[in-house]
Image (tube, rainbow, N blue to C red; front, side, top):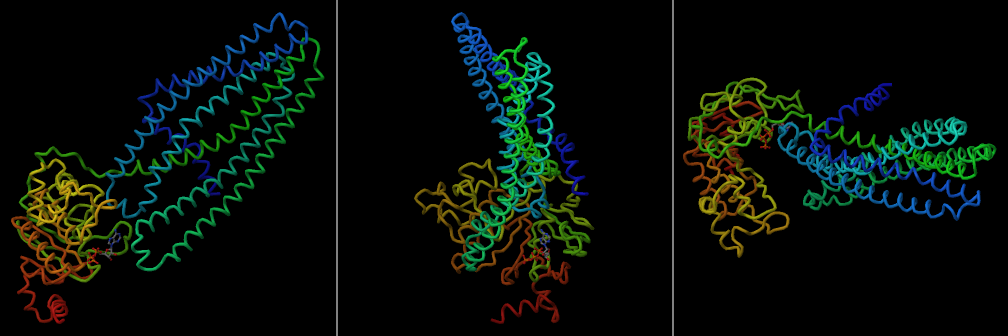
Length: 590
Ligand SMILES: Nc1ncnc2c1ncn2[C@@H]1O[C@H](COP(=O)(O)OP(=O)(O)OP(=O)(O)O)[C@@H](O)[C@H]1O
């Protein structure tokens, strides 16, 4: 029952909601109208054929073929020529409108998607979002280029055809109409039933594609865990499901087609039978011939409508998915003028009784009553066992999320009151797993400030101790890294990330220390670069090795979401029962 209600709502609400996507086509509405005119003209000319052929037979029957053959022949050629011209322009115009509309829709969806808050991304899979932009939009493209045009053409043929038929013989038209619409209604009901299956097949195909995408992206893990057979099994199970549903859907489709053939051709036979009985008295053989042709046109169009109806419903489903994304509220970010990006903050940070849980797991408090105060230029180290909430503190500072209770102040002002883009422009992150985009080293460093000059980039690389190794590559800054380029070592990637941060010149620096050990030479270079980078800025360091936090101005020891100890290394070491001292002894005992 509930399912049915939902589906009924889907039809009416769906069309209304999907019509909102019309805004992307609006700039091209006149062009689209031109295409519609072409479509109407080409459909109308196609309606002239049966009439002309019928006339040809009639004059033949009357033995006057030689008198009229040239006239009718020429008219047929003219109709053909007109139809070709109209069809060419219809396709050309519709394709151009569609391409532009679909590109606008793609751009709008992507630009919206990338502005959504982190909360949105932490709850969704990349593969799923990817398919929104690729396959859902392609379905809409089909709708605009072929489906809609087909739909209108069929409607014109049906209405125009019936009008012409009624003109030839209204009795025979009534007879035909008594049979065909009944079949048409049955066809639509059947078509709706089939649609359920094609939707299911699509969903299953999307799921199996997600497996391919995720395992290829994470191929390192798949291989390292020797899980090739496990993944093959998982993929096989999913694709086997597709086969099962696909075959079921195919069976019903087959039944649907046979039903249409039997019903429609049966109707045609009935019409011919009735028509033959009516010949004579102003109704000639040629008229019956054109009548049957028109009925064929109409029958074909009606059966085509059911398929088109299914396609429109599918496109409605796709637009529903897209609208779901487009309706998600964006983060309040904006393009900052370069002047606004200049150092702005002093870098004083205060957490006041901050409590937090992730929106996706509301029952699990991740931070409880976290309070601390860092003076500008301080180096604050966050230590504590895995899952203690260190990264969460950073997430809140970057305002990926807002605290559930309490406040975070920067320079005495609540972070919620700052412009989000300005706030983030004052920070830079050197993450644990450095992500390099598949481009040149130059582009990767310039990610910190996309307007930076060549000199600034080189200087940043120098400061990050990265210039030495970059210079040794034959292509220098233009060396391609990432998927299709050379693979950099862990230490090199870290230094690229540091150069990125240097270029950004942030007031607040966030460092997520790499957990993987670098060799001592590389470690020295990275540490040196980091020390230089931290100079004169407030920095929050997520420390995994206690050896690096000794010089911190303040160490916050976190456990189960709360700050259990805080102070300098010396202060904390004095607490004989303290967690920090315990952890410290554990790390240095071997
Ligand atoms: N996006 C998220 N949605 C729901 N829960 C999350 C999310 N991110 C982290 N958590 C949970 O919040 C808790 C704290 O995680 P957090 O990443 O802050 O810990 P951490 O101290 O940085 O750990 P580690 O040192 O292992 O990185 C964990 O229990 C984790 O499962």
